[in-house]
Structure formats: structure tokens, C-alpha cells
Image 1: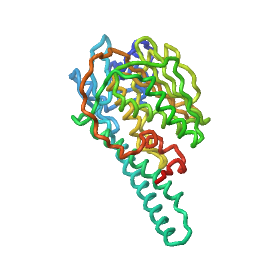
Image 2: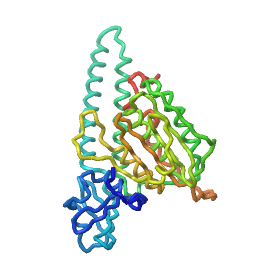
Image 3: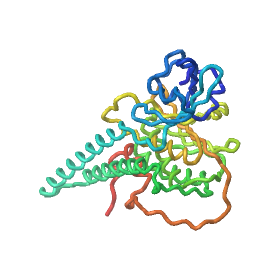
Length: 351
């Protein structure tokens, strides 16, 4: 959380840091989330040194992530506006997490294949449970590889972003119906709430599908009471999508201060933790749609997410679009994205 007393800084969507004579004078919540070590009155951290020179704009590195800054002189010192570079979304920590998880998943597959082979040598063996375990591990591996492939392609021409005039309410309703039936098997109740039958906005349906499923998956993992609420509403010229554990609505003054805020990334991940790619992808999808995202970790451990997306301008023109290459291998995107949450029995596929 920010220690800044200036409401003007909080209205800025990116990280904002005021410096005076080499010391931190104030900063907003976005900057506090990106750089937890900032302290009002403290010396400017060493990694900010490129921003303290004569350059009006540039880059600096912090914990393996490249940040872009712009500097504006003020009466006392300077104002820095900071945001992560899209070219450096894949961090060293995420690569380490990828290798750790992939090794673990491959060991699980090897073990299940060995056990299945042993069963096939015995009469009357039933390999159904082990088949389900194999399918679950495969879906988790596929999800991990898909996340890595997305982050690897950031800034490259092959990253496909095809916004159209689409119905976000219809998309949320369809995804929540499919996800709710699956999450029920994991002991998680998903409730979707939307006061309107349709909410049009310019967006990429495939990327927004991925965004919603990432938020639902993370919420289901963290939901302390086994309840997740997906809420869609329109406020002024914005579509507000929230995923919470309590269904509590957000006040307008809270929505006015939405900002892209990566969670602190300084600790060494536990073995059961993911690679940290999902939320990085979610933030990038929101940025592509010129939106904003607020993440909040509650004391109970629940992760609350609020996404604000512009509802215009809408394009009424019809365009011929090349179909995307199908790369899911026939797997349900909902099943793959929720694979970390769902029990093994949900992965039994009939021949």
C-alpha cells in the first residue's frame, strides 16, 4: 500500500514516485506494489539511479524486471512515472518456476506410466484412476507451456490481438456456467452476477476468455470458504469485472483508483507455488485492451481482482478476419486453466 498523502498521485494509472534531493518524498499505491522497499523520507533505491540523471525517459532493472520511466522536473525534485516494460514480462523467477514445475509434472507422468504398466501385467487391474491422474498432469503441463509461450511472444509479430465489438456479459455467462459445473467437483461454488443481459465493448474474445479463466483459477485456489463470485457491471464508460470470495461490491471511489499492480515478487517460491505467469498474462491482456487491474491480497489469504475495461469506441464495420490456428489439441480451455484446482476424478475422459 502507498504511504503517499497526495490524492493527485493516486489518480495516476502507473507507478508514480516523487523525489526530492535524492530522497523519496511520496509515492502512490501502484509504485508501492511494484517496489515494496520504498519508504517516505528514505534514500532513493540504487536501481532508480538511471532515473536520477539528465534523461527525461529511459529504463532500469529491478529484480530481473525491466521498467520504463519518464521524469518530470518539479519545484522540489522530480516526478517519476514508472511501468513494467512489456518486453520483460518473463522474469528469471518465472523461468525458474517453469523449470521446477515442469520437472515435477514429468516425474508425475513417469510414475503414473510405470504404475499403469505394472497393472497391465496383472489380471483384473483397473487403471482408471491412474488414467485420470495422467490426464490431470497433462492438462497442467499444457497450461504451463501455453503460459510460457504467451509470455515468450510478447512484443513479437506473432502475438495475435484481434479486437471486435463483442458481448462481455454473454462471454462471462458461458464461461461461468462451464466453470461452475467443474469447480463444484472441487468443493468450490461459483456465482455469476450481472444486472444486464448484454454489455458490448471492443475486445478480443479469446484473450478475454483467458483473462477471466486466469482470475477464476487464482480465486478458486485462494478462496478460504470455497466460494467465488464473478461480477460484471457497467460504471459510466467502463465495464467492471470483479472476482472476489465474498461477493462484496466496490464503491465508486475505489474504482476510480484502479491501477495495474503486480504483487510483491521478492520471496523465494514454495514448492507448491506456481511459476507466477498467470497474473503476468492477465495484466498484459488488460493492458492490450487499454484497461486497468487492481489486485488485493486479504488477511484471510483470498485474492481479490477487479478489472476495468473501456466500453468504447465500438466499431460497427464488418471485417474479414483470418481464423486463428487451433492449438488446444481438443482440450477444453476451461478444464486446462482450472487444472490446478480440480480433483483428479474430473479428468476422466471416455473413449
